[in-house]
Structure formats: C-alpha cells, structure tokens
Length: 180
Image 1: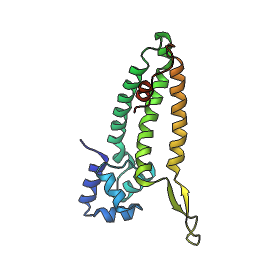
Image 2 (image 1 turned 120 degrees about the horizontal axis):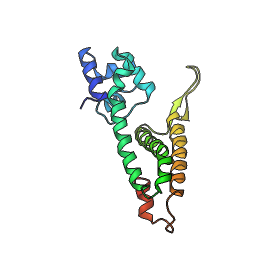
Image 3 (image 1 turned 180 degrees about the vertical axis):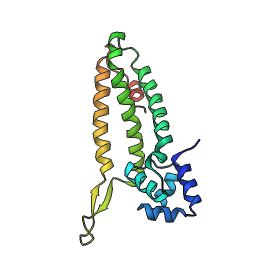
C-alpha cells in the first residue's frame, strides 16, 4: 500500500537526500522524520507542509492516500458505533447518523493525537525570540486533544441517552463503548 511514508522515502531518495538532511530542512528531528516514514507517527499538517516543501511537492501529493486511509478508519469506527447504538429506535436512529459519523471522525483524530502525545510528550520548549530563554509549554496538540475529547464525550453521552433504558450499563459495555 502506498503511504505518506513510502512517498516521502521515494521522493527523498530520488533527490539523493538522507533522512537527516530531509529532517533538518523540514525543521524536525531525524528520529521523528524516520518515524513518519515508517508509519509510526502521524504528523500534523504543519509538519507535513514543511516536509512537502522540503521534498518539492504539494501537501495534497503527500496527503492523498492519508485522506483515503483516514476515511477507511472512520468507516470502520462508524460501523462499530452503529453496532453499539443499533438499539436506538429507528425513527431516532435516522436523526443521529450524523452524530455517529462525527463521533467516528473524532475518535480517529483522537487516536492519532494520542499517539503523537505519547511519542512527543505533552510539553515542548518554546521561546518567542532567540534572546528569550526557552520555557516549557503545553504543546498545541494537547489542547486539540482535550477539546476533541470533550466534544466526543458529549456526542457519546447524547447517543447513550437515546438507548432504551435497561438499567445501569455493565462495566464491559461501557468499555466497549469507549473502545477499550
């Protein structure tokens, strides 16, 4: 399967660049660049834009298959959620299909954000100028994760409230709902 990493590698090699050179020109560490090429990291659009510029291609060129791959993941998650919420009465289920789709999209984004946070940490060194001493600040992806998670939890709560009342949910049902 053609992936971002495979396209990056092919483009880099066709230009006679090492991973270190491509990473340096893109403004990221060689380790992070390598992990993107091997599919172990899912970079932000900002990072992909820098990589695309370094490799002399458009961002769309790098994203083309990523979009398809993400949509496949969303479809799988949407199926999982539809299965969980299939007992919502039909007249209501038709109304909430948009919520299920949105929850599936958020879940895929949350999974990617979480991987990035685990691999790159919650904090980064930051300074507004070279004269200023860098300080630790929360990475923007952590804020994105927190906001997306709140929205996801809200959608799941709305969907759960539409389920027929059968008593309190069992622990394993709650874990299945959250994908655990």
